[in-house]
Length: 468
Ligand SMILES: Cc1cc2nc3c(=O)[nH]c(=O)nc-3n(C[C@H](O)[C@H](O)[C@H](O)COP(=O)(O)OP(=O)(O)OC[C@H]3O[C@@H](n4cnc5c(N)ncnc54)[C@H](O)[C@@H]3O)c2cc1C
Image 1 (cartoon, helix red, strand yellow):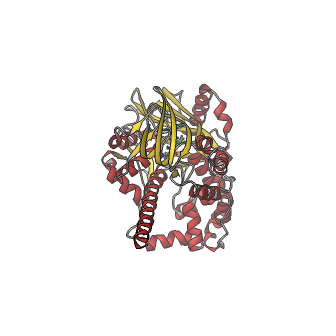
Image 2 (cartoon, rainbow, N blue to C red):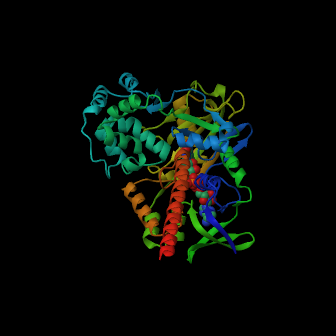
Image 3 (tube, protein in one colour):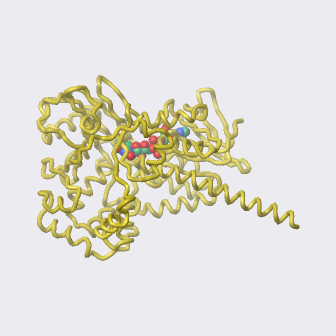
């Protein structure tokens, strides 16, 4: 039977970045992944000159830890910055309108009514709320007014997180905004204070992919782990064996077992729930109750001349009130110059999420027809797409709904009772690639801290024995 210091289960970005960090910090690691390929949700496909992303299309980073990680792993050399366009759009009454990113822009935008604009200016005078157990919708309504929620934030939450703002937990989904309110009393005061206090060290938000697409992130992180990754290893049982974890996987060569001092589970919540339920029913039920949304990504390629809209910008998001099937569209040829053949455009369109679960049951023709029809009206497109590809994720993203911050705390409390077991996946600490990398770094730090504490107490015990 194999034995290893740290066994990581799941080869998505959560598992791979954890393995990379732990290996980099000098630990003996082994990673088991169920599928034949690494990357989980992340994969890049190339066909007839179009390069598409199965899920994540770019990293939006403002965390210095992520910049450090990219530098250490050599990924900096593979980074492909998005073209420096700041234009993004919101659908408003069936028409694309520029989405203002600054307060001054909002005040002059046709998106908001006069009362809506006046309400925005009141933000600094709104008293600080309790914030705990407040939904994203209630938080935004309270601080910025109903119009801000209806016309902008609902589009962001459903378009980028597939979530329902009325159910999503503000503390978990908008941690930076809720922290600004708690610390400075208002978002306006918080943004202003941060600008003044952090003038020199303020992190700039950078959007990027990699040369060759997001698969390069997976390939480059896998390289230093050569010989430490096993694909086609589908874990079906975990149990305690003395101070070790005994893990069993189904492989093409039959059943494999491995003993590990540390076990890092980077698999989706429903599977982690099933594996852990017998060992800790409370943890099992906390994980089992996490819901997932389905998302379909409809990639459509057109000849440039088919589209009247200039398509200069990153794309658009759709507020719910617009009653469209598209949650948003990313103009990939405009973001990254190598994503479509010359004189062609590539629009990657997102459908589904918590508020449109029925789209998961549609067939692909219906998804394409619906996306084509809505894009024709918004962008002035003549004819149908020349090229199509569809990626359907039935369990695309975990929904941080209900009292999610409390759920995460309860999960952490249960883990304290199971030494050597760690959970690191996108249902804890954020779904973005940026958050996944930060969580992997925190995991490595936490494991080193625990080792140091263990060593200290062993040393203390030895000294006491010697004295006695
Ligand atoms: C459509 C879409 C668009 C997105 N866009 C962006 C974006 O632009 N930017 C961004 O930052 N984020 C984006 N995200 C979010 C981000 O891509 C995901 O949150 C992230 O990739 C999830 O990584 P993970 O490792 O936690 O999970 P996964 O990628 O799901 O990995 C879990 C792994 O566990 C493995 N596994 C499952 N069962 C077993 C088993 N029994 N034994 C062993 N292994 C097992 C799976 O095969 C898989 O490889 C997007 C997500 C989606 C769905």
